[in-house]
Image 1: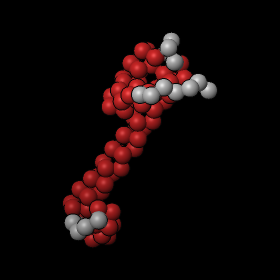
Image 2: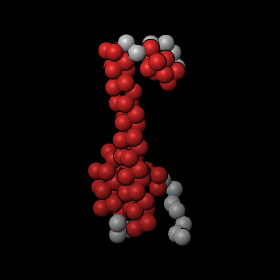
Image 3: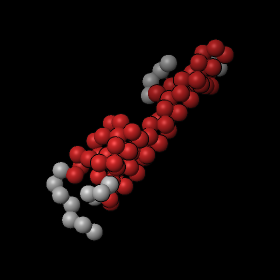
Image 4: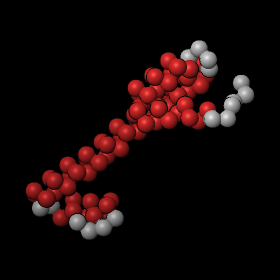
Length: 89
């Protein structure tokens, strides 16, 4: 394994901030200079996008459940949502 230089964490910023697009751009810049770092930033960008999708899906599911609960007046769903949100609805 090659010795890492100071400041290589900066290459993860575009991947973290811009997701797949930042990862691909970083990969194109680094692919000839440091292939291992380029591949690592690309994988990091994919992981960031997957994490964003999972978090968004959770929030959408909670919002959808709260809308359904509000429209149907189901107290059980209100209790579960209250516990999940950490307060009372």
